[in-house]
Length: 184
Image 1 (cartoon, rainbow, N blue to C red):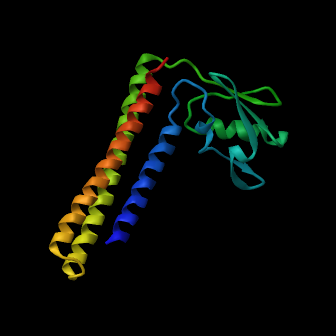
Image 2: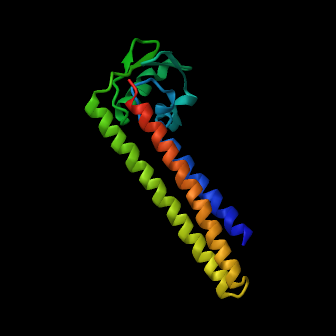
Image 3: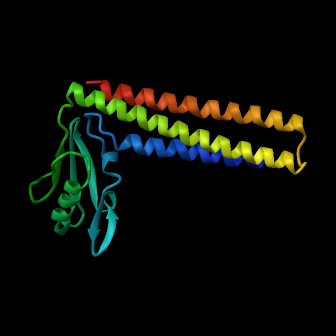
């Protein structure tokens, strides 16, 4: 039964990692290089992550600069940013690309908080689905007479404790991201 718990915790960790990656793509008014993590650029016919083609820096709180290692792909990088859904227009000066993050309006902040909450709820649903699968595994062990009824009850309680721990972590992550979005 121990492997059921190990597999469950591993899958729940992946849910948290996925939520963290989702939160990195939500811009909170401050320049964050992680917002570019999902952008790929066509480089010699191969889609390549932007962070492998250029150095990305944050010279000011609301500004990102992207300096490609190969200046010939500047236009391709600019095009990839325009096509992405980050909502910021790149400014190309021929050597580097600047991304200026505008001040978020109160209305936009509130919509971002709703998006953060929605993604948090999605993560909780994913965690509960993992719990359901693990419960099924425990019930199968009982059905096959590999564990006793008392062990099944103890396993279900332990599984619920693990689930509660991960749900609490999701709540903490959501609260932290909401505070980040709402801070001016």
